Image (cartoon, rainbow, N blue to C red):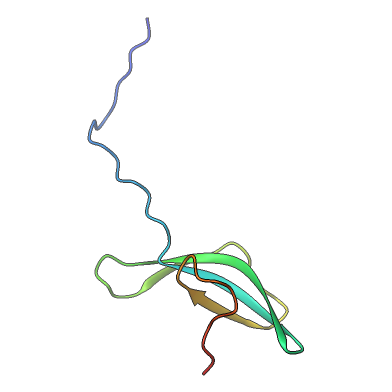
Length: 78
């Protein structure tokens, strides 16, 4: 007979989605090509972010952080 033991029976918090999505933007003429490369989560104390990159671009371009669900290419330029 198998026994199930649990260290903590408290419910686990639901995973929180990222606060921002990281995109690599490669400029090709007048058009930019956007590739999702990671995500960022804000710290509980509000001081900073944790950035997780799944891909590191090596061809130049820029990295843009945008809220999830925003359409690509609608970032403001400085």
